Amino acid sequence: MKYHLVTLGCAKNTVDSMRLERALRNGRHLAVSTPEAADLLLVNTCGFIDAAKDESVDVVRQLDEQRRPDQKLYVIGCMTQIAEDEVRAAVPRVDLTFGAEAWDEIAASLGPANASYDIPQPLAASMSPLLMMPGAPSAYLKISDGCDRPCTFCIIPTIKGRMHSDSTDRLIDEARWLATSGVKELALVAQDSTAYGEDRGERDGLATLLERIAEAVPEVPWLRLMYAYPGRVTTRLAETMARLPNVVPYLDMPLQHGSDAVLHRMKRPSLRVARQSIEAVRTAMPDVVLRTTFIVGYPGETEAEFRELLAFVDEQRFDHIGAFTYSPQPGTPAALEGGQVSERVKQHRYGRLMELAQGIAQEKNREMVGREVDILVESEAPAQSEGGGGPVVVGRTYRDAPEVDGLALLKGEYPQGAMVRARVDGALPYDLLCSPI
Image (cartoon, rainbow, N blue to C red; front, side):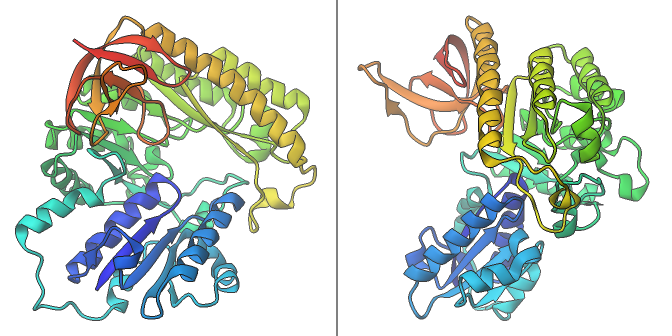
């Protein structure tokens, strides 16, 4: 059977789709790049916030309206785990729905593997990049799933259940397979990466895992750590990151707010704990790049509390900031709280926060001008720069995570996956302008 898979949502969903694709290919099913060529349409949904649910339903509805009578449509993943009835109500003609982490059940629903059909080995090798993220040669490595944290705004524990770590040996095997496929960057992701191994009684399990992976794939120059939980960033973890040559000095640590009162209502760690984690990382890696995420408009958020958030951002000067306006999720404690903030106020505060974040990001980029950097080329082909400046390729420095941070625009023609030494010539609010050395 030929299938076309659409993945929505976060990096963890991308990894789920990778594993689903492996289960389907083990069943001798073949991926195709367009819906028109498929026998089966699959949508891996996101149910984290209302906007993600709306997008998921819109994509499913569009595929349903355009599909042929002989095409099947499966809807899977986080949204169907918690809101299958909403999907069915919006698009009644969906053939089957599956929840999160159901890749083996999905493959089994298509019947036994056709042993007479085998994927020729050269083709199998050429298919490997399809399992990576957009902008290969980077890939996500999901080290655990689920979450035990009590955050009042988050539906993830309901969707994914208790935190469960993946096998270290299996993760090393997957890292080696991805390295063999040509990956130059592995981004380690989880709902809470710093909890890795806790369900097995391990202490500092993430630091140990980093050591094992770094040793197993020395040919992968960039190992990147995402979704660290404040207070779980130990001195050993920070020092391990600093010591390992292929772990980039970059950490994504979602903090969610900058007011202790709001953090208390969210059941999140205090600013004292957050500052301790930030200090541990910056002490071990003075050139570390810090990314974080904030929620504005949480129930009861006052103007004074929001100004505390702005002051905290101005104090810490984070390199990258992502922000969301609060969206109440049924089944979470925050959805039942009083003091819901109006949408107009949420959007106004969001704009003020992002204006501050953009100014800091541009300052950080200006500090890079004149420095030498390594650039990982992502674009498949060069483009012509405006004003007849010659060809330009798009890539990233270690300072920018795939899909969420800025880019490096590099003069010249280089293949996708090349690692090019360059000099930073100019700075935009989020991107760098570079020339090869």
